[in-house]
Image 1 (cartoon, rainbow over the protein chains, first blue to last red):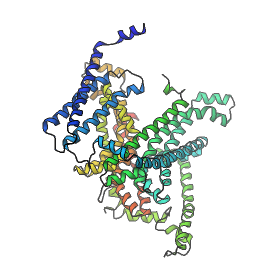
Image 2 (cartoon, chains in turn blue, brown):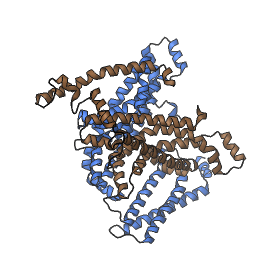
Image 3 (cartoon, chains in turn yellow, cyan):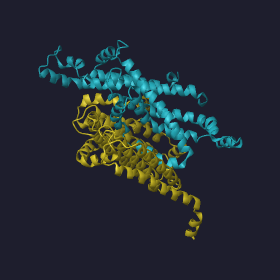
Image 4 (cartoon, helix red, strand yellow):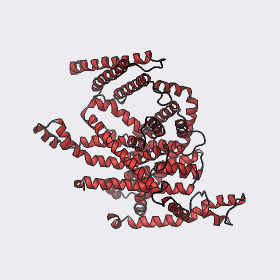
Length: 329
Length: 287
């Protein structure tokens, strides 16, 4: 019964469109890859006809992609829904590779994606050490400290109206301050070791966490507050049973925002002084001596870690606040 | 001014006074050990005791108020000197605002793509979302150098980076705004048999303006950070606050970087205020 239904539900026209899309996409990729393969070890500019071929390959691929993506618009599985985006990324990378090879752009200026990949494999030891310094020591420590302090401070502020009125306006003004300007001051104050960057990260993370947590603690429905009062609940119970659970989604928003800010803070902090290690230091140094393949590799490492970290926090959030409206179907 | 009638005023002032009163002892507390060490090492200082030296060290842990004032005076005047804060802050503000403008223009097209085509949304939006959890700023030093190689110089590379950082919130905000018109109004356009472009020009674009400003408010600070980081990688005078920051950080002029930090904080707050003002002027019906 189920099978019959789904077979009937299929639209033969859309099916054909999707098939045509895959064929076009494969043809586009085929053209681009054929060019890259044939031009792999050549050092002269490609003739005009071949450049046109690259353009055609990209266009055909993009046309195919549009059709393929249309057949993915109804899926709810997050991984499957990412397929069109992944294909777009792949198509863009292959096209860039082909263009860079056709125009013989100096490797020192814009390295081809394949070269970046091989560099990434070559220098992985150094980059992993850098990542340990930047992510584990600086970003994660700073993020953890800033988040704990932020939540604690928000609890305090939500309890005392005077503090709320006196501090919160400053906190929102603080969010308008560019953190990069803090970096050199703190590096000069604390030194070039990892601690200075961890402090930068902690300060950066602190304010959004405070503001978000405070909103969560105070945006409680009046009905619930009245209920707590009619139960003669103490302040402690008020917080543990009502305000803190209510604030959890908000806190996680702040924490997720914080992961991105933490990576940015640590990397930018290293631009202003580091002890010879760290992803930001590596990027700064290598950009100065045109080692852009290493710069890109460092950016890839930072990006992958950034995305993984964000999703890890999002995963914990789903585990802890699965009851919240935003996760219900 | 609503601020002066707000109930926040008195607590805010009290907190400010407490911090101001605590600052001097804190400064002494932080500086005295360093000053003592300098004296013990026999540094040739004009002062005799560590307590006396603390407020006037060359590279203090916390600068004293007098030092900050002197620093401000020397970095501010003459107003039009290439090392003065004012022209550099104006440069940075200009780079930031051009970046926002750039992000708004590109963001509008991207948002139209999202609203008009599901396929476009599916194939590009996840990448843009993922790019937001990425420290995009890391690209800045390289982008400035590469763009410079191709003759793109001056404000454009900085605006590109500032815009790059600000792009996502703006694109998403505008897309939300383009979808926000009342369904009744959309139906009305349909009954008038209006072509799609008219629906956009007459209905969807005006509806998205308030969302655009909300997005501006979120992204103006990010754009400012982008502009400052981009300026670090450029060379020359009047290169903006980022350049000043980097030069003075290299020269270990601690008081100067404090002054520049405070100035860029003020610039950040002013830019947010500017966006608020522009919002009030452009969308008066929202108030």
